[in-house]
Amino acid sequence: MSSTSQKHQDFVGEPMGEKGIETVAGIGKVLGKKLSDKGYDKAYVLLGQFLLLKKSDELFLDWFKDTCGANKKQANDAYQCLKDWCDANL
Amino acid sequence: MVKETELNDKDLREELSKYGVAVGPILPTTRGVYVKKLQKLKTENKCPGYQKSTNGNHSDSSTKSNRKLKQTKIARKTFGFSSDESDNEEKLNKGRSYITRKTRRSSPVNQTPPVNQTSSKETKKPIHRKVEGLAEPRRSRRSVTPVSQASVANGYSDDSDEEKWEEVTSVDISTSPYLHHSPRSSLTPRRPLMPQRSIMTSSRLSHSSKIETPLSAVTRNGGKSLRKRKFDSTKDDDNDESASHEYDDSADEVVASAENFEPKNSERNFFSSFKSLFSSRKPGQFANSEVGLQNSWRLHCSVLLPIGTVVFFIILGLLYITMRSDSLVHSERLIDISETLKIDSPKPMAIVNSMYDILSKAAGDKICNYTEASDVLSFNKLKKTVQANEGDFMEALKLIKLNPQWEFVMWKDRKQLLGKDDNVKDVRYLSSLRPFIPTLCRFWRAVEKVLFRVTMVVLAMIIIWLSIIYQQYRARKLNEEKQLMFDLVEKILDVLKKHYETSCTDGDIQPFLPILHARDMII
Image 1 (cartoon, each protein chain N blue to C red):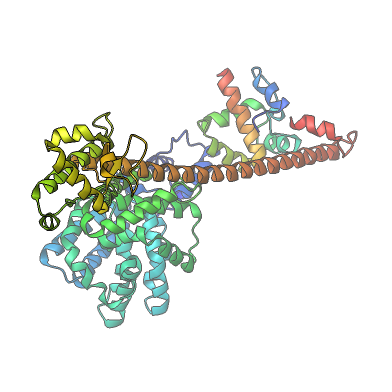
Image 2 (image 1 turned 45 degrees about the vertical axis):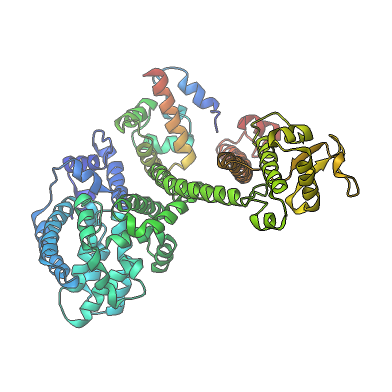
């Protein structure tokens, strides 16, 4: 629980640049596809939404689950990933 | 009421900020989440009443408030009638209902009672209504703004015919457990409490419910279990979260009301707070939120005083008992006059008396640690202090030997007692078994004894308490370990699932995973 995945570390470790949506932890091929279909094709677009929700975990998790049908763990991973990225890079 | 989805951006933002939510930009992509959040908050009814009082500006549709105006009017009528109170009280009610209107207009509570309104419409089915009435208090308590209870009453008391009247009483009963057994008498017991009630309502208008008597506010906490049972039976569709909210709330109210009704309910209050003292120790019971914690601390303080008083008096009683029952203390003088009269010459008896005094004083001093000297006095010393001639002194010794009940001890020397057959002339030392202990000394002895005993008891209790805590701690640890294990299993399953998914999409990967691999992935 305390440890984070490799994907998470890779994402948080550097500026996201033009990274695709699937580089975000918790987002695999399936979720990536769904999100891309809705216009969230890049990680920074998702970050934009995350920031619009004021980094609120509750709201973001809600939105994320609604938008792409992610489960709790995936949503949590994505949230944590973005949160950590913000803490490190913003 | 306007549905949350139809609110415009501004209203949505306002509504949410009333609940203390930090609202970001409301855009097509974020709107849905905020609407959902608002709905959730409204169903939970996170006490808008409290926040209302702080930020005064609220808006509402005019038709809505009109209807409510009418309702409160009726409510006022019902109050005046049902509790047949004095004019003064009626005035108070007016003021109250005014406030009622105010809080009501702005409170989102009105969303919750769709059930409420339907219940008031179907006035043709008494039994139904009764059930609704039972369920009602909970809903209203949960919403914290007491108003909805008043609206319940309106629903039932539009008419003043007999049957309706009974409905009102049934609602009353359900709100106050204290009156649970006497449905008809629900009107009378309120009366004597009115002055107190007015105090309470004026001091905490936004908290107190309108129908309930203050007594019931207190007893409600006492009858926690009762209420809980009732709720279960009503099968309300509420989740646990709101229920716990309510408990916290009621605890809050107890503290507040305890200030007002100390004399009457002090005992009950004491026990209820005691109960909550224990309940706060159990994890996962009612005191699971911060509010509960805070309240439990306040209760701790209020419990401390009576407990301290009780302990003080217990110690006092123990002191008295120990002082009285001190085995070494003999209050009565040993050698009484009646015995003295039997003796021919008064001189030896006087000597015996003074010897007794001296010896017992010496013994007492030794016990009280006033002197380092021994309580066994030598023959010559005694003779000198008593100032008797040889013959009289011998007589006195003989007397002493003849009367063992005086509890003198005669010694041949420092180590050997005088035998039965020995002559009195052999006596070299004397001592007494009946020490004379001054009151102060007796008191300190008693204090020492009591303190020792109390310390022992407290220590024992602390040990027991610690062991209980340790047991709980162990149980919790075990649970945690189990939980960890479950989590691990879940993780493993997750990893396997993920792997399987990727294997489905990617033909190269095989659907199984080596154990070590899985382990590494988890780590």
